[in-house]
Image (cartoon, rainbow, N blue to C red; front, side):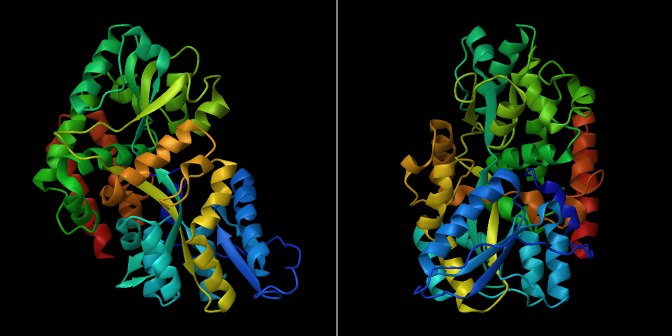
Length: 433
C-alpha cells in the first residue's frame, strides 16, 4: 500500500471535478515538436510537482513541445474518468493503480505503446516492469517512479542498546524484538488504524512464504484466500502480532495508531518502539516530524527472509499511460521510458526509479542509493502492491474488504480461520463485479 492508497477507492467513481492546468513558456524554434502541446495529468503536487516539472522542462528543451501539467491529487481516478467520458482526455497520465489502467484500456481509452517505447522499457527495466505495464496482451504503461515497500526502519540507538545488527531472517527479527522488549521498549510500532499498512505487512510475508507465483495467483483471485498458503502467511504474521510485548500498545493500541504516529513512536521523543515497517516514504515522515537524522539515527534494513526465501520487493509506483495518439504524446512516453528523464528527478531527490540504467551517483544520498539498489537487485522477484491490483471494494476501502479483515486479525491473531474465511468472502464479492 502506498501513501496514495486511498485513491484506489475512487477507481470506479465518476465525479464532476474539472481539471486545472498551469502554462509553460513556448518551446524553442527549430525543434521537431515546436508548436505542439502535451497535457499531462498526475497525482503529484508541492515538491513532487516542482521536480516532475523539471523533467517536463527537459523534454521541452529536447523537443520544443510545450507541456502543461495538471495535479489531480487523490482525485486522479475521478478526474481521468470524467474527462475521458467527456471526450477531453489529457495526452498522458501518471497513475498509481494498475487496476485503473486496466479499466481504462478495457474501455478503449488508452493507446498501446509504440515499438520504440516498448524497446526502451525492455532494455532498461527488469522484465517484471514490462509485465506490470501489459494488459490484454499489449504494453500500455511505462513505470516512471517507484516505491520500495519492503523496508523496516529502526532506531540506531535502540539497536545499539542491545548490541543488535539488522536482522536478515524472520527468526532473527523476532529475536531482536524480544531483546529490545527487555530494555522496556516495544519492538515494533504498527499503524493499524490505517488498514493499508496491514495489507503491506501481509504482502511482504506472503511473497516470502508463498513465493512470487502464488502471489500472482492470489492477486488475480485465481486461488482463494482460504488457500493453505494464506493460512501459513497469517500464522507467520501472528508470531509478531500475537505477542503484545512486541507490538507497541498491543493489538488494541496498534488499531488506534495511524501511520505517521507509528513512525513518530520510533523516532520521536520519548521513543516507544525500536522499529517500524513501511515503504521508503517513512524517511520523509521522519524528517518532517522528528529530530532524528535519516541515515544516522534512523536506518533501515530490507524485509527479512522467511524460510530461506530469496530477496524480493513489494513495490508501488506511478505508471505513465498515453491517451492521445499524436507525435508529441508518443515522444513524451519515449522520453519517460529513457534513463534521461529519470536522471533529472534522481538528482533532485525524493525519487526511486525501476530503470536500472540510471547511474547510482545520480541519487543524492546513500540511503536513496541503497533503496534503489534493493529494488533493482530484486529483479523479477519484484511484485506490485497486491491490494492496489485488487478491486477497490476489496483492496482499497476503509473499514471494508481486506483492510477490515486484517484489522480484525490484528485484534485477534489467533483466529486465522475466521480471517481467511472473511477475506475469501469479501474477495469473492469484489472480484465478481
